[in-house]
Image (cartoon, rainbow, N blue to C red; front, side, top):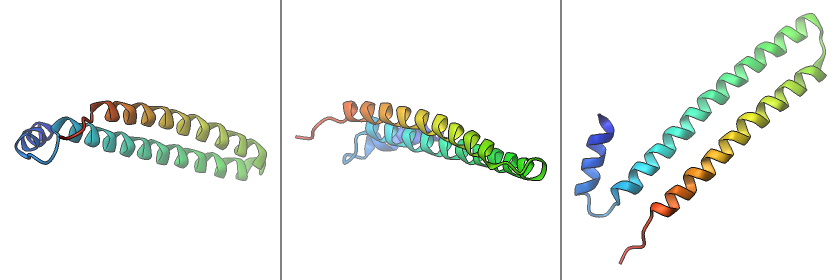
Length: 96
């Protein structure tokens, strides 16, 4: 519902393109969602670190798990952000 009001507001604002504004807002939500997921993964990794420290005290397994998880999350975030950025560039039209 808030997006509809935002879109209507952008229609009456002559200085901004409403489609571009919606892309910007969608991109900001996407980034916030990935930051929350990354924070959740970091908490899981911290929990695994505590468990490994208490039982095994082995850090090599933990470093492997942490590196693999970070590569998966960061790689998917990078691909999606590049895709959204190119969609944003295609939607922007030069002003006359």
